[in-house]
Image 1 (tube, rainbow, N blue to C red):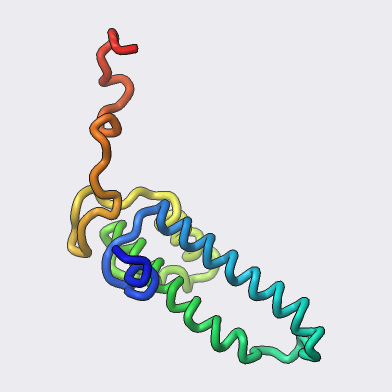
Image 2 (image 1 turned 30 degrees about the vertical axis):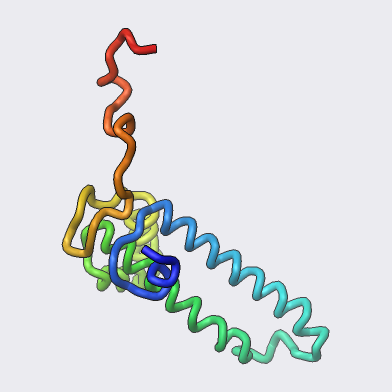
Length: 138
């Protein structure tokens, strides 16, 4: 999956690690933009009380779409429709459920109706648990 496809298409699946990585990256971009707007915007004569200024409109909408696509792909990895994203609209409990479901629970193993597993092929050693190893192994 290409970076463009990962960020701009709601089709497919996204692993937990991919979800956290991209989400934290987007949060960092938003925090940086906010900092730049706060510190340099006032120097250019823009007041923080102006509300929704053009920078947030131009940059915020694409970032919102990217967050939407990442979340839908994560729900797909859990084997659920992207409509489950609506659960997050329920204050507190819905948001907590979304965080647990998308952020901490593993995706479905193997392929599902949304595509192949984003985990790909793992090395053979990862398929065995430690207690399954022979005792004579170092």
